[in-house]
Image 1: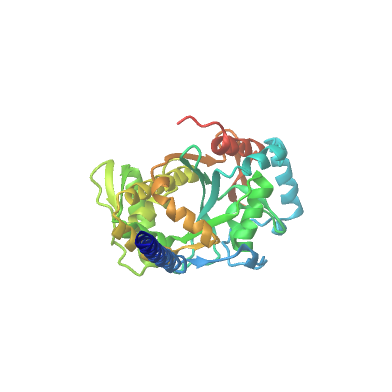
Image 2: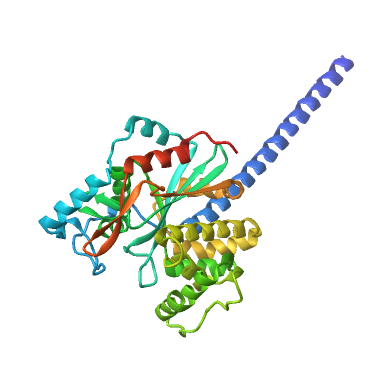
Length: 382
């Protein structure tokens, strides 16, 4: 009987210990879960802090306007005389331009590739601070290929003569003025069969602040480029910013590498009177973007935080919260991707046309469509 009593006590003690261990395990698990929730909530709060700094837009809000504040050499097809329209059609036939002749089913299959994200980067030339509808003088399609670990930057020349849906034929850089990102996307789709859903816009004045925030960029300049920058572009930018005319001039030593501040980098990016006009200009823009990516790679976490606080309010975008979060989480990896550059129209696929004394690029869209899809979606060899 005594042994039985001891066994009963031991059994009760064991049950008590098991209950105590379960209780401790539950308490520890609860504490861990609470900690995880707090961390996730904090992380989400930090993310919202940054996301809400950007100017979030929707392409559905973009309304088409017909009366715009544009340059004197605007070449909207609706304003052309009948004789000018006939001459234009003859020019298009002479250079054998083809439109929408590509295999659209093949292109749709490629664009459905979830490994590639295409974001249109826009630099606008507003004469006032802050993003607003103005000409997109810089258009770069940034294609992020997660499978092949590479980023492709494809510049599209602003003077490409395109059909803007609901407007008529005009320069590509006019589409954003008439109908915002929504109309610009439709213009890319109608002329190049390129479907773009996302964009990021920055005004040239904000670009100056961006470059200054990362401490400037190192660029190789020719003496000819420096002379044009100092004579035309830098004084013009200084005037717009209400700075002294001779501020920010680049001191000429010889051709070579120079450290450029924001004003100088913008001037360099806009040079079109040295080399091959807009072709040379878009190449310079890609070089500056490349340097900005390299500078960002070497920033510390605190420096990246400071950079985000300054840069994000400069941007307008239609990226969703989930898309921005995905880009931020993978930013470090993306910055180490191989960077490939291209531009449209590609050599041999265009001719200069004069319309109302304005120079535009008549383009073989089928050739350029194939070029872009091969560049972005073709087989990659890293």
